[in-house]
Length: 304
Image (tube, rainbow, N blue to C red; front, top):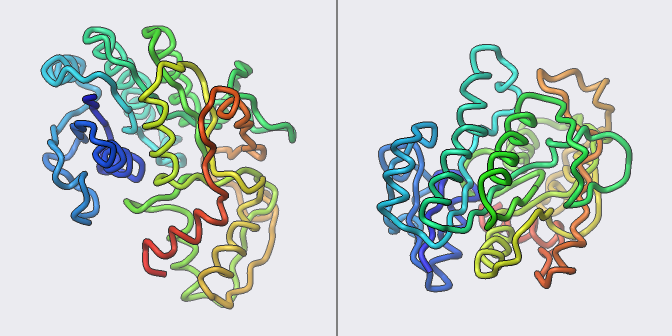
């Protein structure tokens, strides 16, 4: 099968192209940069066909996808800077990318009759309570601009296509770009003690594992809404940091604090990022490995 993957300069798009290639699929990658701008690890993504594309340009999106004629599109491109999304000068751009850009991709997918996978987030919910959010829950109440824009993308996909997967993820880490693990390792090298919030609860998602699941999905017609994070139980960012330092062999002390004690960020953060992943098993998909195992593999990958 032939797939068009957006956002290949990011954490997830990089791994999706590599997974597709590993299974013998033809993957065409794209991002906004003139050429592939991710890590040069000599993997399949660095050798795959690459097309520079601004997803906010409707005509360009239409022309590229009609030319590529993919069987499926994995849409990983997004504005993900949550706090910067709150700045007045950025809001229009955030919605142009996450909502309108996604709509452009969905409409082009419909034209060529391609299935589409859209990567969404737990931020479409209000993050309150302690019950895990079900994959088919429609109780949308985003807390911030980023969440609103990603919900806009969800509605654009579901309102345009029949052949779609909307996959909500949380707490992502991968090889390309910045993430929480890289930040905490960097801070842990230069500080004897770090303060980390312990009242925001969720589960990490390793892009390498997620990419495998997304390609599993792409090879089926089991369309709909899904939640996908690693297994291993729900934790706080404090718990996660302690395990990062334990596995990395750091002696840095981790001090738990509340979100209020830590200080308000520009964007409101969900306290409850628990995602119910039971639908994966119900639909015959293999869940992701535990986050503890994923962390161990990731630390080896980045040679920590």
